[in-house]
Image: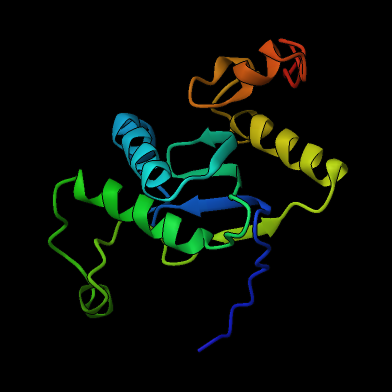
Length: 167
């Protein structure tokens, strides 16, 4: 079994990519209210700051800042995945390994994590997050995509409203 090494910095800021097991699914936007509730419940149970997010039909990207002295993002993702899964109907056809781990078969088992190292690294990841719906053909500009923190960044003057539009 591979040994996944994760950067663990207490109070760190992290970029994540989390995907559904079925990459052809549109479940995340179909059940966006359930996902929002799962994220809210995870933040309530183990606080973190949601710095930025984009939710696409089959995956999401976000940046979180963890509290000082805390580097356990994995338990937070487990909470989000569990709460979201519990809000959905059961899937009958689970593999034996999924049933053994009490998984629902909704999410990919692993997720991508990257420790944000400096302001430039943060800016690149913010751009990646907010341009993602355009990259995948879901919108012609980041402002058109409703499941994103882009509007918050426009309101704060970080981006212009027409940033990232395809001409």
